[in-house]
Length: 131
Image (cartoon, rainbow, N blue to C red; front, top):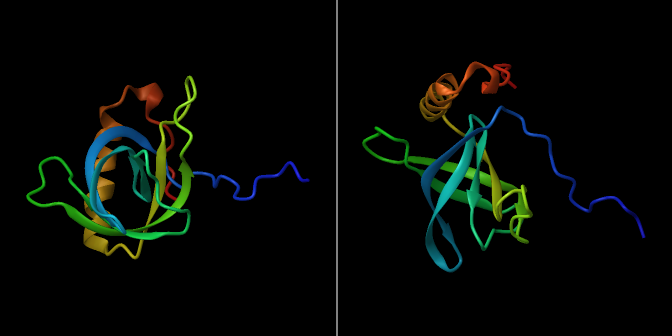
């Protein structure tokens, strides 16, 4: 038996900002509302006790503060944590990578993430390298 992971955890592609945002998405059970607990220009992590399987394509409505309406995005589940939080670990949920995002939506998300990043203390801002 191998000690390697069946589904290795991908490295984050963009600097993530810890920030809670309401999100909604459709599952086979219906429409679900949860909270994203961090966000980057390329995706988000949704706190949920019932994560969707890795590889699932999902339509997500993200409510950005100050916006008149939610941003409607397509995403793909890239990893899950169904076991729950270990002491100091990640909360249960799923990481979703945005796919096929048009320029307007990408600009709105990037601007919001940048505003959050700039509000952090200088030593917590992280890299501004775009990937």
